[in-house]
Image (cartoon, rainbow, N blue to C red):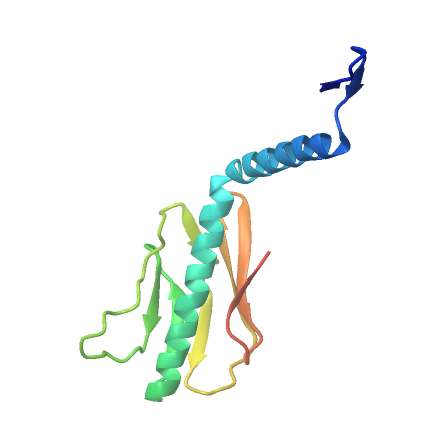
Length: 144
């Protein structure tokens, strides 16, 4: 706050007020991001991981010419038909968190054909659900 020679106050300048408002906006944005629901984060991470695994299995199926299927099991999921690669570890077959599950009975056919039918699987954690799907031509994506 500035004072004139006569002692009357002139108030804050517009620039000073804008700086204070910008600082408050940045602080409240940071707090909002920090308070994001952990279950939602975990479910998003699981769904993105599954989409990447499905695309990797699809690529392996096309490269080897062997049909590959994905299905849900009681302990997670499995890839059926993947060829054994020398020195390359197998694809994971469990969720990162035991509270995650997928639609029971779903079987996805991943290849070896370059075009597969449109396919989808629902990934759940508690009451939240995300869908991992493909139109058969593009890679798998996560959708609400």
